[in-house]
Amino acid sequence: MQTAVADSGRLRAPGKVMRLARLGSMHASRLSFMRILLRRLQQECWRFERPQFDMDNRGEGVAVYTAVGPQRSYSLVAFGRDLPDEQRSDRVIATAWDATFTLFDGVPNADDIQRLAANVPLQEAGRVGPTELSLSRANRSVRLWTHVLKRLSAGQQPDQHEIDAVGYLMRTTAVYGSGKFGAADREHIASRPEFEAPFQCEMLTVLLIRQFALDWVEHMARCEGGDKAVPMAPELAQRLGIGNSTGLGMAPFLLNHPLLLNNWILAKETALAQVCAKPQARADEWQQVADLVRRVAADVASWHSDHPVMQARLPRLRSDLSMLIERMAQPAGANPWATLVGWAADHLDMEAQELINSLVLEPYPEVDALAATMAADEAGLPPVKGSERVRDLAQEIETHYSWALAIDWDSHEAQARLWYVSAEKLEPRLAERRDEPLDEYEQPLGPGRDMAQAHQALVSAPDVSVAEFLLRHPEHRMAIQRLQWLRHAPFGEIHDNTLGSALMPIDMLRCKLSFFGAARFDPRSDRWVRICMFRHAPYLDGIAQCPDDWMYQRA
Image 1 (cartoon, rainbow, N blue to C red):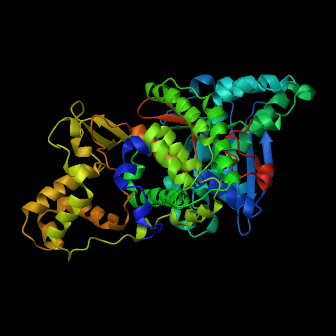
Image 2 (cartoon, rainbow, N blue to C red):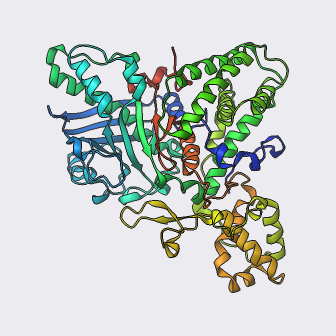
Image 3 (cartoon, one colour):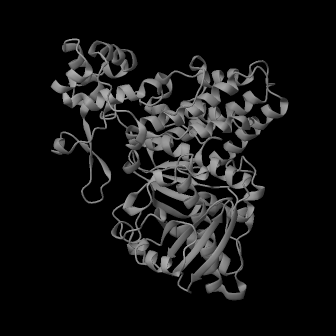
């Protein structure tokens, strides 16, 4: 079992960290997967080429972008089309997109391109193979795309306020990997150094899509404006990321991959503990964080949302950032980071608390080594250990799942919802248990309830071996296996009810997306959210000179 190593006495308690409200307040950090990727690309001097860009005057055609590393190359193959407005949709049930993509293992030849052209634009309806590492699609942000295209084709630069209001020219509606629709399994690439950290293949895909989006709109501007057309000014282009619409399909990931979740949270909590243990901070380190708070405050001033959850959070976050700026105008003092983090816990809302917990890591690149602990060999997890005693497992549940045992699972509110898989799209969905007769299709995504039910059976059983107990009660096998797996993974379980009437699935989405490195969280409901990826990052020709804090907006 691979986990980060830390002095658990200095870490925040899992019962505090692993509540949905806190997980749903997390922000990107040095250990986010986009940061890990760009750091590696820079340190290993990766090169980028565009061997093919065959787009016609309507914007239809194929483009290839190749990332050349020390040992291997990877190519984004992009297919663009002139999609009618009425066919454009962010929903997972869409069947047509402005652009579709795959990340190819190596450099594709003409036969590869022909095969991919027949399949990638179809997405789920097509099929890819083991040379394809991801499958994705994206739509234009019609409002901003139209504005940028009109301005560039007329020889003018787009308006910065328009750019900042949207933040992206295109938004992806899915970036599939790990064997989906025939793509290469994670195990096929996990041992490659560039893909050892989680989701590096997917992050590379999005990085290359961002370059394609800029090249595509500039190509269309030249087609419309001819000699009058101009490229976008670099300082404006860098303010654009890639948008993403993420829904319920991602929410169960944290429940289905508890060891991976543990390693992510444990790495970040370990980094925070290491920084908070520092007895002193140099003046430049303190000033670096103070400057980042001001940069974040300037960025947050331009955020907007139509959803009540974020509408309530944004004014408080802006107020808390003003308080942070004032607090950091004071000298650092002794035990500066522990003192600052403690002050934030006492005076600021959770959103700002988790933000400062990310920002204090920035002056300390030594925490980057923890990225090596964030993957997990879930395929190698052991079977149930049947020799253990029933009494010992019951006591273990009482110790580690007291939060679950405190819930009245007989109440309607506690089991108001159930998770199932849509037959049409094979995507997770959430139903109201009372309204939809779907119990026979329920997915095992309520570990708190399952552990409480297992505990009830364990304490009622004779003190026999686990093997003998499971012969009589096989329905509890999954809960017992999960209990044994997570003994050394203190951050692997969400300490909240994932079936209850108060569940906000976007909290799970927000947690995962923060580890991606996403920003500008804009919930559209309690079940899906829009975000921005790689905003403020350099484009491919600037990665070699990329500052490590690129994600924080500069004036």
